[in-house]
Length: 124
Image (tube, rainbow, N blue to C red):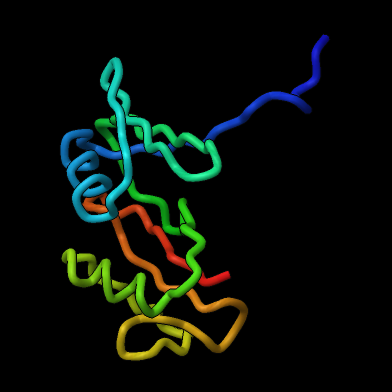
């Protein structure tokens, strides 16, 4: 039996509407996408495709499902905000006026896709 050590694993997550997801990930985040058989693929840096599939009884995750490492979180947050992305604030985390947490670990800011899935940009 072949083990999974060399398997090129990929992630996936659900949304209730593929067309809405495609518009957000392409237009707001500037990502390259493709669609086949009703499944959307995000073509992420590092050759890490991520599938987005429709789920009629969808419930958004209550945790971060996708992290985007960035070199300059301030510039990234500003650019995304200019495209209409709204950053979330969470009780118990020290976040600045733009939603960036700098107190613990690397600077990070969270936002949601139209389905309510939590995403983040993180300066590393």
